[in-house]
Image 1 (cartoon, helix red, strand yellow):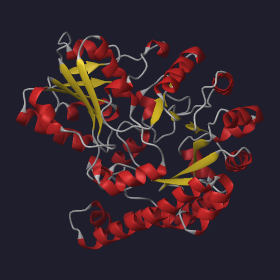
Image 2: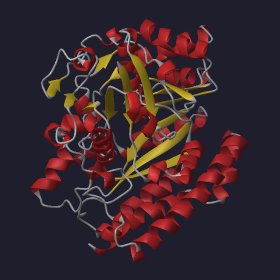
Image 3: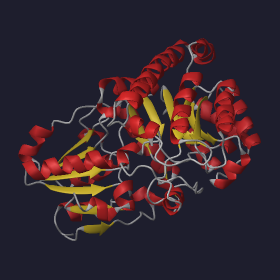
Length: 451
């Protein structure tokens, strides 16, 4: 059978200017789930292709001619696009549509309105039986891998859209349970792959010629001794890349040996969830850190020349606009390489979603809005538009042109130029959003401004 995996994306993210912004922000990469599941099917003898709409155009018209099964991987923000694709597929072919991912796992009955079958949870143990027709029930429950070493490595030979960075998921889930997080619930319980297994995958990417690597674990440094051993092996076996990205927490600052190994293994770009400088807000979301932890982590990253992407959450109930402004200023003062301002988003399946529904505070059920860039609920301390405008203000303040030279002096000319590109794109995006909020009555920005 011919099987095609598609990871959809929204109309905004399919625009050329947005794709350009993504390439300035970091290297293109592909979600690993379809590459793992597609690899399973390929080894069983099927003709498999994988497409990532974010990174390139999908030749849907040609694919409709001879594809037997389309598999759509959906998160909340791309679910409407996935449903749109499913309708096009059903209208123009006899192909089956299978959906899986975080959003169908949270809202399977909704996904079943568009799909022939829905797989919830982890799909490695069921994907072959579903595609080959041995599992015919419309809703198929996936099973978590007790031993994650059993998962095959992602198969990049079946990927048809551009990709410069290989992704490694060395653990599944997260030992922490922040109230807004979906992945810690989708991939529970927290499980770790063996160091040998991780190193074998990294070696494969080195042999394939990748220059960039991403550790996509929710928290790569959750087990510090294991993270150190992976770094040691990468260094010893010459498996380092030009740059490797990882997600971490503020507690990495507690281990100087870990920081040095991260640097030496070229894990020099990290996203850390600062979220807020308001301790009440941190406690409310069960973050498990305090403001002093944040300050130490920032200083440690600068000392070891690890470029910090500061992630902050805008719109927490305990935060005021002044708290948010203070957090953005702090991120700039600590010379964070990038800022990732994320508007609190009540994703289905999370405690935050349940709270917003129970309190009647949701102002949107258009899942395309749920991308951490748009206000989808009524905040406690400001209007929806004031919170939306804070998102833009944060980007404009952080990505100013003067900071480009600071980042260039700290990390090199290439990164100063990237900062310059982000400063330009931030201003273009802000101009477009503000204009749409005033005149484009069908846009999300107009709805937020006038709700």
